[in-house]
Image (cartoon, rainbow, N blue to C red; front, side):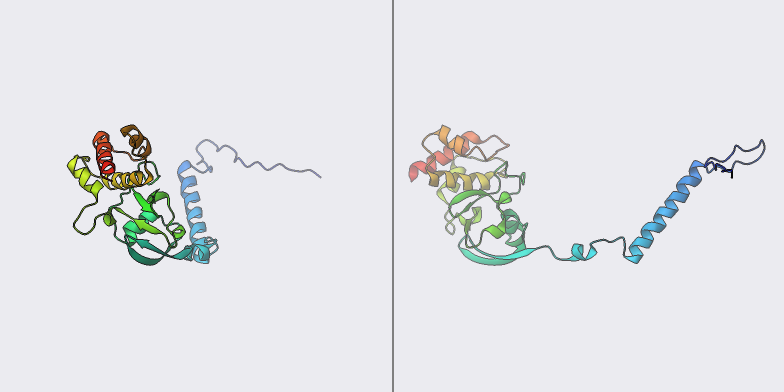
Length: 213
């Protein structure tokens, strides 16, 4: 019994006879049509949407209660929500700024139970029962916090974007007792970046406020 070999490549066309080999244009058109039909069929049939029920489900959320600037607040949030987004998007407290959103610039610094925290790196759901103070909660009515007043007196800001975080970090620095010298203040506030370069006046404002304590 003989076995014939079938080649996938068509024989060359005779002179004057049109070629039966597909052109580049017909190949692209054919594969596009077939691919589109496969996708459409998968979507319509539902087989293409693997895990669609999981995708449609709501993300995991938790209920958290915390005190912000003296007011008790309870909210249900996505477990991935940062304290910064909770303050800005849910509570309307936009004084804490979103700078790098990676904990590198300090523009979002707030006090949590008296300690300095980068709000962008702090998960809101981990703050059950915590006390948070933002720049909006420093003043006593119309009376500014001494460090806020010192920033004005020393002209310790320019564009002002980093100022809330600088002031909150300065308050924490004073509470922690790290104000023995300008060098110590600079060291303990090194996580707060001022792109306008007002560091000398910022340190002076912190030092002035610490001396009044």
